[in-house]
Length: 83
Image (cartoon, rainbow, N blue to C red; front, side):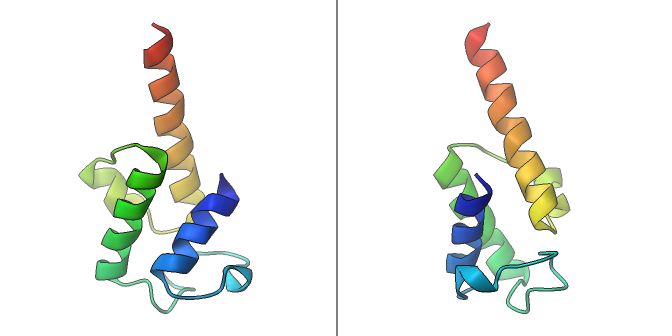
C-alpha cells in the first residue's frame, strides 16, 4: 500500500517516485499546498474506495498519517463487511 500511495503522491505533486524519500510531509514537499492536498485526497479516496472526514483530511500532513488513516478505513470497512 505504501508504494501505491507514493505513486499517487508522485503523480499529484508532479515528481518522480524515487525522489519521495525520508520524512514526507507538507514541509518536505515543495508542491504540497492546499490545492494539491485536495487533489491528493481525491486520488487516494478513488484508489482505495474510501471516504475521509474533514478532520482526517486536515490531519493528513504526512505520509505516515495518510498510511495510518487508509489502514484504519480499510480495517473498518472489512470489519463492517464481516458483521
